[in-house]
Image 1 (cartoon, helix red, strand yellow):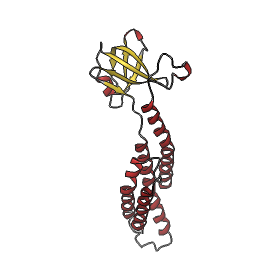
Image 2: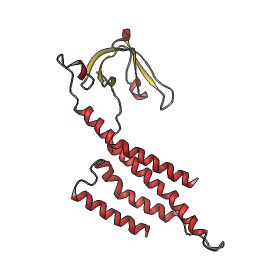
Image 3: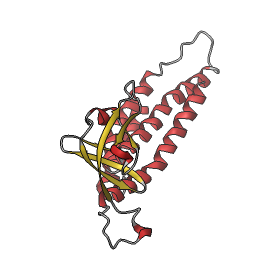
Image 4: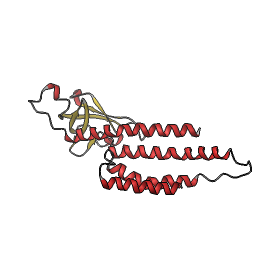
Length: 210
C-alpha cells in the first residue's frame, strides 16, 4: 500500500507539472484577449471577446457547497442557461440585466450592476505548488518503505528509527521550494538568483535528510 501511495502521489505530481505551462498560457491568452469588432473575421472570433446583453429569468442554486448552479435567461437569449458557481447564482435575481462575455465558445463572465460571476481559471503558480506538494508527500511513504527494507537485515528485537524526522525534512524542503514554485512556476531556474536559491535550498534539504 505504501508503494502504491507513493506511486500515485508521484503520478499526480507529474500530471500537475505537465499542466503548469497550459494553465499559464490560458491565463495569459484570456487576460490579453481583445473585444471582437465588426471587421473581425469569422475564423478569428473564437479568440476575441464577444459581449452579449441578457436578462436573468431565474436562478437555480445547487444543493451542497459544490452543487451545480444555473442562470436562466429571458426568452432563451442569447442562450438558454449557463452553469455558474453556487455563490455566483446566489448573487443574481430575476430581472437583472447582465452582460455575457463569450470566449472560445463558452461564457466566461456574467456581469450585472450589483454582482458578477467569472469562470475560474487555475493559476499556474497554484498548479505548480500542488505538483510540488504531491512530490514531497510521496517522499514520506517512500521513506517508510526504505526503513522497513533496512529493518529486514536487523535483529527482530531491534527497534527501527522513527520516520518522523523524514517528515520534518520534507516540511523544511517545502518552506524553500513552494514560494518560488508559486511566484515563478515556469521560470524557476531562469535567473542567477533563482539558481542560487535552489542550490542553497537543496543543500539545506540534503543537510536535513542527513
